[in-house]
Image (cartoon, rainbow over all chains, first blue to last red; front, side, top):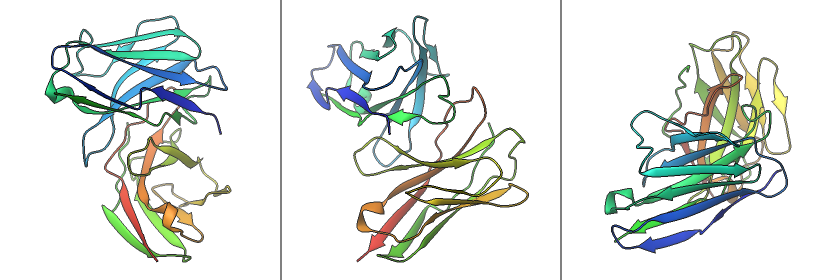
Length: 116
Length: 109
């Protein structure tokens, strides 16, 4: 199957700093990418949908100024957590799909963010 | 988006078949049934999907009820590596994946 990578896999930062997470599709062109977050023992929660070259669409309750998403190319989307606080500590997961993204999505391995 | 209902947890013995049920009584005619699984500390992994007919692939089989209000994911011979949370999700063209709580499958040696 298609491969999606995330970088970094784990990050620890101080409160108030910004953290950027990269999501790359390695062997296909991802017209649409999704960002999820997952707290311990909970399910994945969709944060936003990003389409290459256009602004991301955020789910209700997700602050777009806090979670900046850029999908500048067909193989790369980035999520920047701005002014991170301990409550932003979570497992962030991206997924990507081609033109039939609603049929099959390929997920990255996730990024564990810990804010001290 | 139509909702799915799954048992919170199931147990299986290694090398035995596992049948994971999913109820989706409000499914619409254009909804696809998707199954993903998530191993601990990893991103989800696509397992299988179908619309009306039963589907088989190298990982599993998907049995869909005739009225499409329920489906069953079948793992033919469970291994320890199949221990994961299994999610049954409905989507339609242009629809997003909305994850429920899923079924946590444990496999005993």
